[in-house]
Length: 272
Image 1 (cartoon, rainbow, N blue to C red):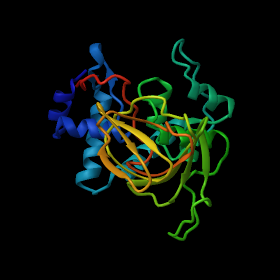
Image 2 (cartoon, rainbow, N blue to C red):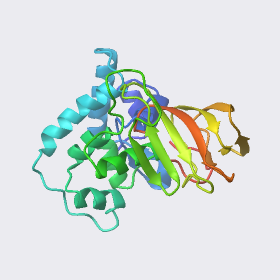
Image 3 (tube, helix red, strand yellow):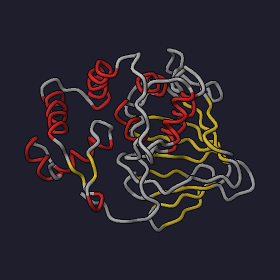
Image 4 (cartoon, helix red, strand yellow):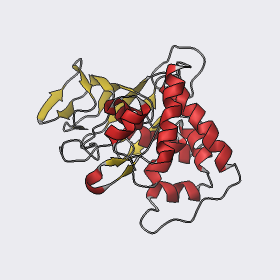
């Protein structure tokens, strides 16, 4: 097994690049004592493929995920039954997927999330962000992707797929374009709030359209009102809530569709 520094040197990239690829759902290293990343020989082979696709073919992260998934699909097979759960690993997603009669491949196609990311969630290695959780909720209850829109680039609010991701929280997808940006309209009822404090790679931009919206960024807490906007690095620990007495409507734009990982609710430093 190799540390993140050793793996980066063998592949010819920086340690930060390996962390980015992990956040993008391209690779999921094991975790050793203290939560430190450990890369196997199979991981190194996967990393070299990713590096080749980036440098030689010029593919971006979504395109590389599709290439990796094609290989995974060939191994999984449509008719392959799910493996028996190991005690302590049968998480809620795995149970819900099996109850819906879906393979990882089918859930991936419905949600737009990679097979490797879904597998990591089921094994408890990764946790979905609110956006990814909303995609999973919709995928488990229907076969239409939440970002499936008409061909026109123009979108009218209220015409997109709406998903109740938690009591008092509804997301509407505003675009079907498969790029880095994922715009949504979040409708948050009074008293509703995020389940965790999140920390992941990427960027976020939001603007409050109506109501008030409390956003915690690190140790700072800001109360945003209509026409207030904020743009921040998603690596900053963040959480949010509607402390007001009317619903809040927030235009929310994130990057790197469907591969974010929720951070710890604590503000502990990152580990290699």
